[in-house]
Length: 402
Image (cartoon, rainbow, N blue to C red; front, side):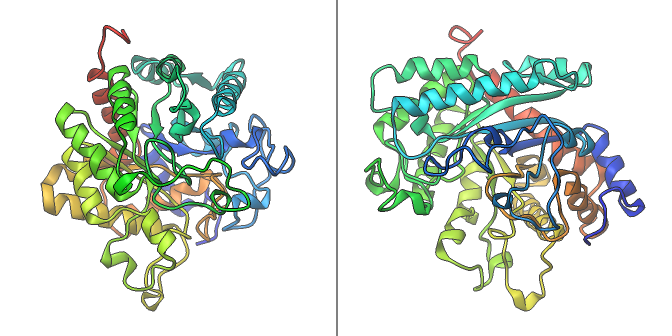
């Protein structure tokens, strides 16, 4: 359905989204001001997202110089809240924390003077943003290596992130850290690009240092994100969440359920990036939240089913996840499902999407093909995220983060 997002047939989908808007758990467009890879200088990856960018062809890859989301188009896509991805590559070093600080400062620069956006520093700020009809944005840190966990003072760096309003910290990204093993590693994590020398953790689980980090994050009210974390580590994190009665987040992922993947999922790497049924169980048992993302490269399933390369593929994953949780845990299952697009995260788009405004097509399929209600749309695309971060906030230690 490669037709414009403002086509009349999407009228009902637009209406459902516009009621409360979209809370995107993982939007990577903050990267456009900062090189994704240190060995690629600040060239085509540097995009000014405060200005409207030209969309690419339908299904374009974000590495093809096309920005999926910018501050001009996000309101047109009914955004009301977003976690903006913060990144740095390779190693646990002081440089990475400096890169974090640079990107957070840049986020503040983007928002200052923009009458549509506001920085979120504490959970109560979300309500204030809604009351003022502003789009709330907060950093989402993808990789604990930015804390330089193997060096003194990492606790102060966690405190700085809490002060900056960081919504969540991912324990690993596309490379291992000293606290967690990554579910998959990217090409720059191997020779000749590999520089950090960090090996998988014992048993691919969470290290003792990682447990200390998780405890401190929970104390500050920062959500623990297990996207990109090896399944063994994910289950170890969820055990801590159960013990502390704190919900766990998977900000952006797909599923490797048999109903979707069959035997034609593709490479082992892409399969492991997604959650298994056991992984979903572990997160849901903590009261946690799972954000479904959009890239077809990770949402493949058996081509013999003639699966379309469009937004229906994303809707299918949401539908299967909701049904699985509902069947296993009851009618409240839908409250564990959210949206974490990964727009601009070096990914490809569904064949009927050019930019974030086309996410309305996912809603169209949910309403018209999978028969979700408008209230379901409100929950998945907004309220579930709000309620999740509210729970994390109220589980904090108010003496260290009032």
